[in-house]
Image (cartoon, rainbow, N blue to C red; front, side, top):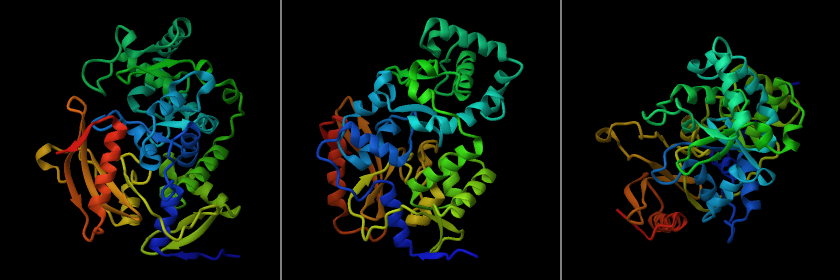
Length: 388
């Protein structure tokens, strides 16, 4: 017997998605480690990116939802003492900070990388004909302790973020393969590698490894919780799963009644509502969203939900940019109403607002509320003023 497909208005879908992502909840007066932990459990990951023109990307989703918080809370959760850690680094959506209980669910990916089945093509040789080089470097870390690429003679080159030397390439393959993980980050944000059993709490290392199919099903379920309502493509993108595995997992979760089929107004493809998704009557609040925020990182979904075409222009030549270099969408209640190009001038202690582009029919109080959010951002970053 075919399941009944519920119809959802676009407004309802938008509210469900915002609630699932942690918006519409009053920001705490004082953000605690517990607030941060619960947020990461909701979102499942914070994407890591090297750009720090405003603040590094992994800090921003928590600020967007919780407000002014101590970034040290996130640092300690990710790179603090082993007994206090609640996060680890690995490839999920992209390079990401993840709650520790996701570690078993990503071991299939580590195993595939170790076998040379996934990962960048330039790194796969270390799983095969150059495996001896990787094994030798792993033994060096085992003997000498935590090491970064720059600690080796042929480590990271001077050619920029992706200007990797041979040692850095080996380290990154070992990282993909789960043979090493991030022990800490240096002031320059350089990754320091060590053995997983020396970094990740024993209780997590000891957890059983599920089959790849069970792990992917669990990842799709977590993705569905983080989305609230989503298409199959949305669901698989969150943890970058292959289409076939995602379809199988969605079908099983639908059969079990965890995912409920819905037809969203204006969406071309079928969608699924997580059975525990909250459907608020309205969503209030405002936030500046990083380009790598999970609410907006899938640009097609952002356009479907908000009628907001968003592209990052970091890699666009300056004279061809439309909205600016590091543009953050401004969420106002249930709409994305502006694009704000921001830069932290740390030497001058100013939050620079380089450009603001408003969407048509932005609310009359939008400017006032944006000003308040910019002032909050400056305070969070320890900057004295907001200006152009």
